Figure: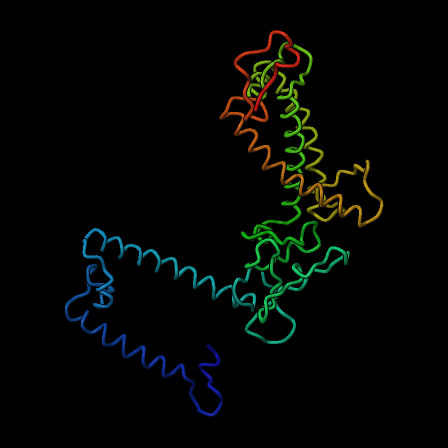
Amino acid sequence: HTACILGDGTSATGPLVQVALFVGIVELLTTLPKCREGLTLENAGDYQLGLNFLPKDEAKAKEMKLKELKNGRLAMIAFGGAITQAALTGNGFPWLFAQRSNCGASLASGVRPASKQFTARSSPAVAMRAEGSGYKMSKSVPFLPVSPALEGYVGEEDGFDPMGFSLAIDIRWLREAELKHGRVCMLATVGWIATDLGMRVPGEAFQVSTVQAHDAMVKFGSMTQMLCWIGYAELFGYLAIIKMMEGETDRVPGDFGLRWLYPKDEQGQYEMQMKELRNGRLAMLAFSGIATAGVLTGKPWPFFAMRPEKRCSAAPAVCSGTTL
């Protein structure tokens, strides 16, 4: 815009004056006829252009006009936001993932490359940068740049954050929630499968199926005690998280001071954290699938097993069981 106003310096006015003059003529020629015949809701925006693309059916034509109106309203909001982002960040699209470049004025913007603590973790795919744009591209979503908020966290190599949640919400809070849900789901997955395979806590109240366990424990009255004990644990954990978020401690998300079987070297610690993160993500998907399959089929894990209609009376210990 500034370049179009000032021009190349050889003339007093830039090309924007010609653009304004041309647009003004178009506005004048289109506005005068409307003023003469009277502006109404029916003829507003009607310049007799593109009539060949307008459906012949009246209902479909009305639907087409409604789409244009809604898309126009959305575009006005989008363009206003685009201008604001460009002015505030000094970068180009997609703004959310970009940081102001320190390498001079440019139409392209970039994200500072994430520092690698371990050279063994770096790979050409992770270090890939879009040619001419300055963005470091995501390994898991190659057509999107990496969010700079992921820098320094385990799993940053994959660069998976297509919705930009790490830029809207504190990454420490997100990682804390992800690790907690992952750990709970890892325990829940093992517990569900173990229960379906026949393991039970002694007592008549616990001799129910996995799907019926929740309602049975509510009826038995043990869920209140579980809620109280878990609530105490959550309270102390929440205090630790608050101190971390306020910067009072150097605690990292998910760290509760448990060091059993934890490697001493940094490389081993990183690998252990990566394994926990990936196994937790897999467990979250696995438990949701297990719970869904268990409710829909009404059968124990692995769900596709079927009991035989007849059992071998001669050797029940060998012939009984499940068949695929």
